[in-house]
Length: 396
Image (tube, rainbow, N blue to C red):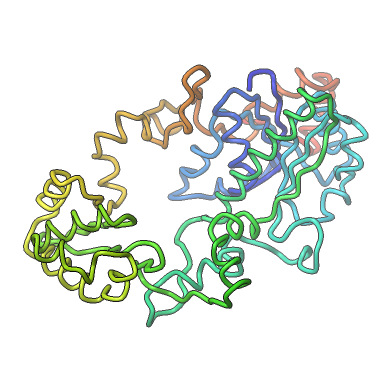
């Protein structure tokens, strides 16, 4: 992505996640933040902005107040020779600031503008405040998550935001490819938080309901429509493992481990339908076997039989896993504020153009002087005046 310039006017997670991914692969990502408050993610854990250190990596921070006309003019100058503009304000907000699509594309017809909101730029819900939690609820995800006798369950992390950021990233690349390879123009991308998780996770449920009227209910850790046995099991040392048998061959291996040939060759369990009809019995047999073995013994036994299983990790386990370390899923970086610390690595893995982490998230306004002198017509004197008026923010 070297040579691609991204202007990021977005906060929290979904919009900035696209900027992070593009920055990981070489784009010059200029993050425009309010000069006093910055990205709300900077209010993170223990006053150390830990979340922003990851999400803001490889970006340059410029403090500009978009409420002021002078600040809006600076953004137009930044956009004039940029490739991508990321934003996640509620619909109509940027239009009020002369920074909507019609205005910015007038400044730069080749611009790809990526707009992320809760419910999209049009539709009956477009003006509603939108967060990932609402998308996780309305997509059907929460309805299906949890135990059968328990409430719908929301994820304890920004799942819908992550999906939206990923969709916006490849939509941006589609748009750049059309512009640069096929001689196209700039365009705007309309991403909602709701639709990516709906399209990605609920696709089979949509067609099932349309053709058969099926409304799936919560099954806990089971998914009997395509994998039996499948569940989370507690081991003798009070640890947890997860297994899945999406194919009959894997199912036979699992049943042979926990019940020998008698269980593995039982004609009731020969087909997926048969296993689904007897899921309770299989869970009981597997669960009882698990209680007699420590987790590592369970994992070693399953590996010997080439049966599908994995430990259920907490974050401390993740830090100890040699596979994740070797693949640099976790990497150690140096930072002026935190010193040496660990964050997630770059993914995906590309053989010829791998991504990289040049630095963790910067201080608010750390690059204001550098970027504005480099990419706008503002002079030193004008910059000093804008700073005194609170229109731009400068670190230090």
